[in-house]
Length: 221
Length: 407
Image (tube, rainbow over all chains, first blue to last red; front, top):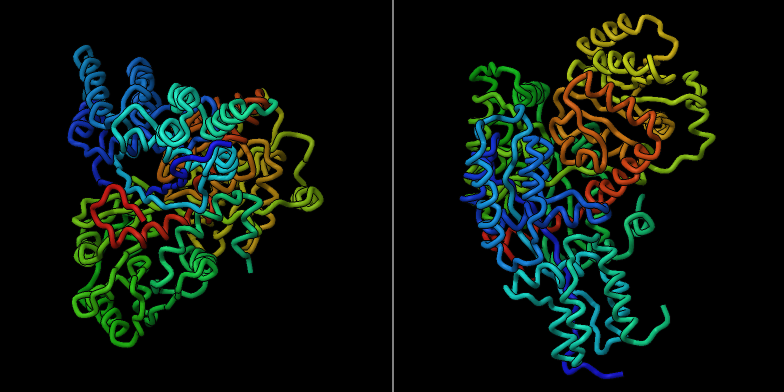
């Protein structure tokens, strides 16, 4: 078994949700709110559902799309915002720009951009504060890495698969960097990088990761 | 006494491990909870469960109660009602009494916490000590704040804005404040009598006691007899469904005997029901948790057709039992139900009737919604998540304004 040049330390993260007090009762106000929202707000509304609904398949879409479809009842726009390929973005600023672009375009052809939702069903802008903790799990080789993947929480997987891309602002995740740099496992690293974590549950994602590592280790299916 | 490890078979080892990880960063901090009553009421119920669990996690948590006379609590009851939208009509004496009682408690209490965790409006005035004592101060609001009376709001706001952080239970309670507002939803305890697994015999006994037929579908709403829970709307919706599906309706709740308004609502519902043998109006005495649990578990579909709601934890209780739920899209309910994923949200009697018919006639779809609902509660509305949020809240006090905190 090849020993890694540097061990992989698994971290985990938890979020505390903040209310901003700002709300939108129609599409124009939603757009204005998104335009002025800091990245922690964009992050919250495009990512928190991944954990809150992580058991569901298919998952509900991001908060903006959910509200547009189910409350504002604009199915076409809701579908467009839900279908944004978050996998291709690694900067929150770019995700925000894309959402603004889609809603703006929809507003141009919208005869009633100020149509209000019923009172009490407004969109509430929130944001998140992320706390990152080191866990006790450390992998020195591929076998240990697989064992850790089996034991860590889904929040740890989330941290290393989703947040690392946003943190590094690159199209890599922590796992693929370690596999490539510390173990020389280029092919496995590429397989990890190819995954779209946004369209599967976190538990399914865990199983996929374990399966890929087991295959590399030559373990029977 | 419930131990943290008792939750492990329910939420998983990894969740308990992460609670311990979080707690390890708070081992040297004293958390002092302060509220206005040691028994009775939702806040005392939460603290009774939370404080021992925090202590078990190695956190030095304690809980103290302010003192106040009968008149003081009459004023605080008035404050409570005015936060629910009732017009406030306070005399100067009442305001003075509120301020003086808080000042008296400020002088007499042993405020030893590094973090002072103040619950609800009654002890809110303790914050005046902050300028002398320093420390970190949290104001936790457990009340529906969506439509407060302006006078009461401005009065409380003058205190709230002196705290380091405020905490609300639902997004719709957020206010325009100069201090951070954290969202922490309430939770249910899966090991309490109201929510724990029940043997089938117990469920059957409860059905027999109320003469409910266990062979036919049961539609249930558990709530106080209150116009805001729309029990008459529920009866109308049921009647529309009953034309096509043979089913029974259970409307069960407590709190009417000492509540004149509740008695009036109950009488009105009785009149509407008009001795229909398939509608069961059950007035439950206090401490009927096992009965509520059994009725929820025996139900085919559970309704919560509220017109206005605080958080609406009865929804989480129903979902925890993997029941398909149809509920009004008000208060904290949309936080608990993602429409068409973990339940159904409706706005009208007709919509409730339509979706109820759908669920009764499509048991597979109903089952899927119920299963999803249970998972949603497991991930988001159990006491373990509540504990985690409280610990993050404590940690946040030393990391104001940081989006990402590395510990």
